[in-house]
Image 1 (cartoon, rainbow, N blue to C red):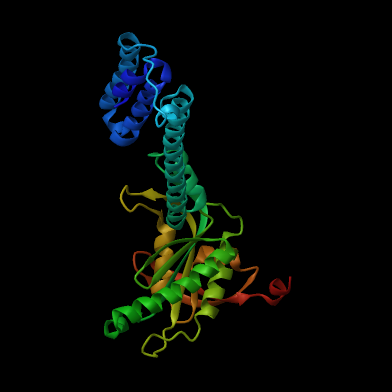
Image 2: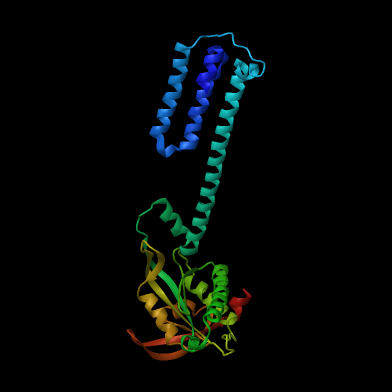
Length: 321
C-alpha cells in the first residue's frame, strides 16, 4: 500500500517513512525470539525505501483534497512519528511491568529465604551461590522443647484441629525466640529446637537460652490439647561445641550438629513434664545467675550416668538488676 501511494504522489511526500514503522512493528508483533525474521523485515523495509527513491518519480503532480495532508511530507512525518512513539511507549511500559514483577518476585523469594535461613547465612548464600556453608562454634547452647505424651494423644485428634493447635503453640514460641534474638532451627513433630550462639556468636549464650526456656515454660503453662487435656512441656538444654551449616540442594535447610545437640535432646527426653533440665556444662555457666536444683544422676542413652539439674529461674538479685 505504501509503494502504491508513493507511486501516485511521488517520493517527495514522505510516505516511505511508513516502512520504518513497519520495521518497528515487526519486532513488536513477531517477537525478539524470532530475531532472524525481524532482521529480514527490517532489511526489506530499508530496501523498499531505497527502491522507491530509485524507481519512482519525485513528484507526479497528483493532488487530491482528501489525501493532501496524509500524502504531504508533514503528514507522513507526523503519522510515522506517532506510530513509532506508540510502539516504543508500549515496549517500555511492558519492560517496566516486567521489571516490577521481577522485583516483587525477588523480594518475595528473599522473604521466603529468610524464613528458612538466618539472615547472615542467607546473605552469604546469595553473595556466593553454590558455596558450602559450614561453621564450627566452640561454645553454643541448644534447647529442645517437647509436649510430653502429645504424639500418642494426637492419634484421636482431627487433622485440622491438630495442625491448628500445633500452629498456635509454635507461633507463640516463634515470637518468644524472635524477642530474645535467638535462632530457631527446626520443628520435628511436636519437638522444637533453638540454638543460642550460632550463627551469631554470643558470650552469654547459655543465659540467653535459659531466659528463653523460662519464658516458654511460663507461656505454655496450663496448655490444653484440642480435647481439653493437659499437655505439659519438657525442656532440655545443653552447652558446648557444635557445627552448623546449610545442607541439601532441594528444600535445603540450616541445621546444627554435634554432641551438644544430642545431649540437649537427651535432656529433654529424660526430663520431667513442666520442668527445664540442664546438662553439667550449662549448669556451670548458669550457676551464678540462676536458681538451680540438683536432680541427681540419671541414665542418659548414649552417654551413661549423668548428673543433671533443673532450672528454676533467675536469682532475685539478677532479676532486679
